[in-house]
Length: 128
Image 1: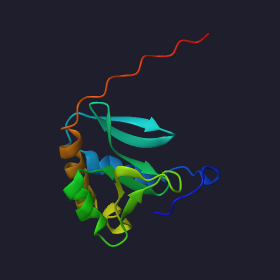
Image 2 (image 1 turned 60 degrees about the vertical axis):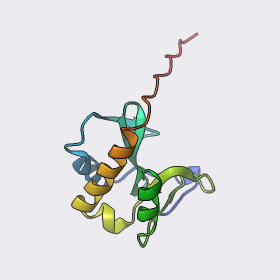
Image 3 (image 1 turned 120 degrees about the horizontal axis):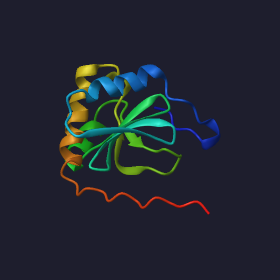
């Protein structure tokens, strides 16, 4: 997935959003919400996966992260150039285009993120 500057911001294609949604079917305790206008999945308040531009990113533990990075075309997730997010990987297009393969990586991400401590919700800001 090509990284872009904030000025190049693009809406996530519907087929990518649909692929993410289909791959998440059956995963327990997954909450869906938009982050920066992009569909994302959360477990206990922690980010599990999401769509960004024309790709999907997943949050993986150390061993799974290395295995995914070994796939031809996989990369670290950089929402902005030079700002890689350590635990997040962009699987190659071959995975995103294969519902079973994407489902497997989401299941691995779910297993990892489910072990993280729940994130406390931030207090709502009041308007002045």
